[in-house]
Length: 442
Image 1 (cartoon, rainbow, N blue to C red):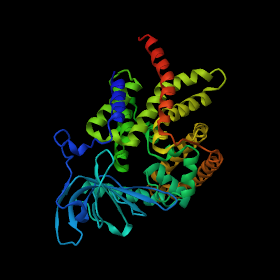
Image 2 (cartoon, one colour):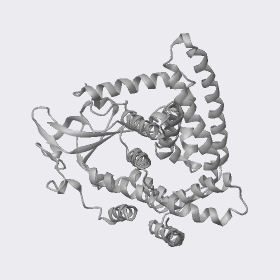
Image 3 (cartoon, rainbow, N blue to C red):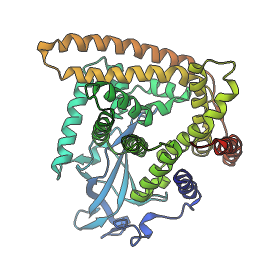
């Protein structure tokens, strides 16, 4: 029932009118109130604290950076007046530098009221020289930023193109990713592989379990790997897809420790309920919606699809094909609504790209780990060997992207067409749910 409760919360959030804003309910959601001591048309600058790491996306006009800031003070255009402020503002800057959560920020630009649902009450577009980062009021945030920068510097020892892709897959940083490579990921329907998600955490969790093989107790090994996984998520930054995956993995590890039966749909629903209770604005976050819809479709739809072609396809092809097609069909309604295009070739591309990305990411983790080893243990030669392997895998990924980015996508300008895909999706889901109910429980 928890699974269906979570799906109900998610579907209900999608039906919420877009005029609803969290800052209109300060009594229900403490800390959501937004105000400025000066009228918005008189605001010429503001200061605040970054509520999350800045993110960046490469495009044809240059890298576009995104800074979520919690307001503290505003300054008038003439600089003669200032006052307190509260609320969240989303700042967009083309070509901005990377800043970390908890860092003080000063922006010399005006504010505008946001017309989008969610937690951001204000929005701001500014030039790169209009934003400056300061210090960290908290020691933990400063320590985290230092560790992140150290790991990033070690990744940059690789070939620039290899390092750029590894930073995107391991650290979630896309600033240095080539625009041509980013576009090939998009046109091949594989852009989701660049977004840190359950795939990346799953790879890291399995690698941690292997490295912790010296722990004889399987329960202790799984719990330790889960705790280290939380440390990774804290280092990278809290994001909806990572929080969902980490929460599900930790609940599953706890269930295994307590000898409880684990139901994936219940785990998904429980994760959705927890995250929406803790961070209600996630209901309007596209990453949150896509993450849960794709996994729900995989859980419910992939077994149905696999049974259709298991007689003619081997399992090592049938299952990846079922999972890839389920994820794309499950997210098609939202993708069509927001972007107006889908890339069916991504179903076939995932069969080759997911294993290659898995090997590349695992090799990248080993490279970073080996860079911390003493030189006396042969760290330099080991790192060089792993680097050569990563370059080879990178060329294989680029070759696959060149192949799968050639077919054209399906472009739709009529937004209500997503209801058609949703109706098509509900038919096999209903069949699968009915079949699962017929399975007798032990």
